[in-house]
View 1 (tube, rainbow, N blue to C red):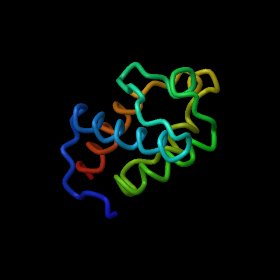
View 2 (view 1 turned 180 degrees about the vertical axis):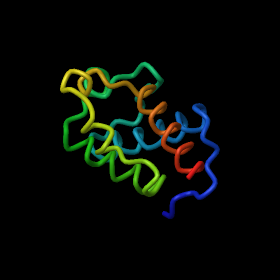
View 3 (view 1 turned 120 degrees about the vertical axis):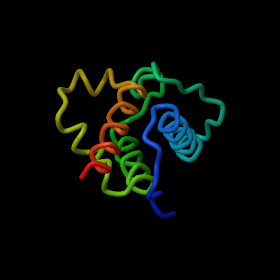
View 4 (view 1 turned 45 degrees about the vertical axis):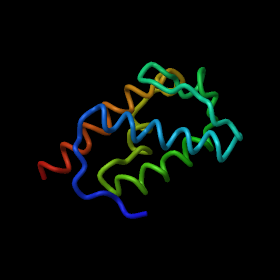
Length: 105
């Protein structure tokens, strides 16, 4: 799968993309296919993702967005508590900002 070159960097589109990626991750890794995912969904408490799952998610984001979105760098800038409380909505905001920055450069 090649990264899309002209992504409309709006939150609705990115939320739909992330929901799809997370649903795929949850089904592939845990056999769960009926997960409710929204902006307030937390990766740790709600989805119960382990650190290895975040590595997998980083790979999925790389496939989808290419070098424009660096999930590892995003996480590296956070305190442990921030990572534990990370929501899908906060990741959406980061992805949108990253895509806008890539478009501007």
